[in-house]
Length: 264
Image 1 (cartoon, rainbow, N blue to C red):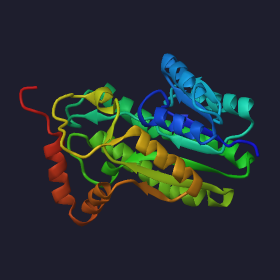
Image 2 (image 1 turned 120 degrees about the vertical axis):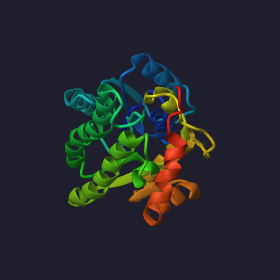
Image 3 (image 1 turned 135 degrees about the horizontal axis):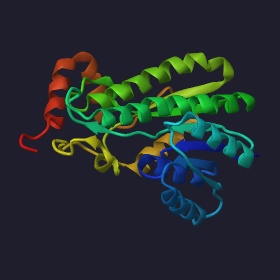
Image 4 (image 1 turned 90 degrees about the vertical axis):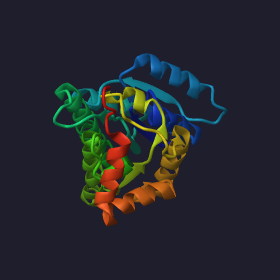
């Protein structure tokens, strides 16, 4: 049988990189899109060194904020492998700081990456999936999509958009046999916090974390079983449930977690 092909955005680090390795290990061909060419080269070497059998890796340098670059990357994937079965819309940035006081360039960058980037990826991938008779879109969102989150409101709102989009898109694409999964991720040990835009002060620890590899394995399992949602841990389910039954309490807990430290 012809190998399935997974297209992953934000593949140069964190969950995206781990997902590329996990899909290749599961015998998918993998197309990894990211801005940092040297990181993609390193990833290509790591995948090539995996025990056989494993899928091939195609490095695609581009920015999800640019629709033309995403469309060109999908075209290159089709030229190389002839099909596209799975999209992992993973590329994203965090933001810390008050909405009214944050630098607009930071807020705009987060929104264009986390919202425009998801839309550009979907709009580029869906025609290829339709031509293939179906496919699967996995949108990496966050458990903060379900709560009010002061001082990380820009990021949380962008993920709420993506999570809502997943639910609507699922119905729009069901006649095309394209499944859509909302992957609601909790706190994960990656470079995400170091790359977060805005203020670096005030993002406190103390919450349970998981590894990028754990999230990646869950994404690969979801690609096989096509659930509507992926929520990995009981703790993350509690956060989402709290956002429904006690939104005020959850918002105040989030405020304590993210409030900037005075004097920094």
